[in-house]
Image (cartoon, rainbow, N blue to C red):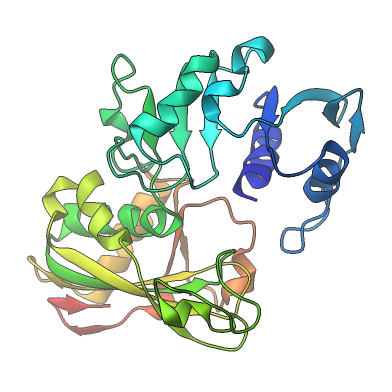
Length: 297
């Protein structure tokens, strides 16, 4: 599903997508699944299967059905940049298999155990195209937390912090109670429960902001909503600051270096107001509090 939404985003930005690999569904079903989305709505353009290709707004996209990345003939279609969104081939070794088919670069849409990790607006300037052929763009939670943490760290310093993400349910959860051997609670009905869960998102911030390595950790609550999650960052500041000063720093960043990545709102909004929002993170000015000038949420 990440791949389908990446395709929508690419089409919105005029990025040419030339090939898709999905070994589990046939072409007609692929066209159907791309056109209709229960969360983001119907794709307003034209989508159809034609002559073995997926046609989107008269743009032909080659379709492959290979199980192994090394078998995908990316070069035959001219695909240079691969979005690896299966959640299976996360390591550099596994994701690099795409290069055997003619690809030049691979972006993994999840945290990787060993690939360089980048969050836009935070550390993309450290990307080295001469040596980094496989990169990770971290998780959705890390992309939300890291821009905010960067602003707080740069302006006030973070001594230590805890993060809680109130997270929409995901595809791995169950519609009704079912087996989940590794984490028993994850097997409970997703639409019936608030489910505590682990997350490495806060620790991952230390990979993209080295100054925060070892200073942040966190947990998650999976809740019965289909989209939009909340990151609650509670931290102790090195430099005293009122909540008004914190809001001003975040707003300034959202209008400056982090424009388009970090949003800012002081409206009385709720989660559904952000479905489809293209920012990585939106700071809700009305939802924060401070205990004192060094301890804030």
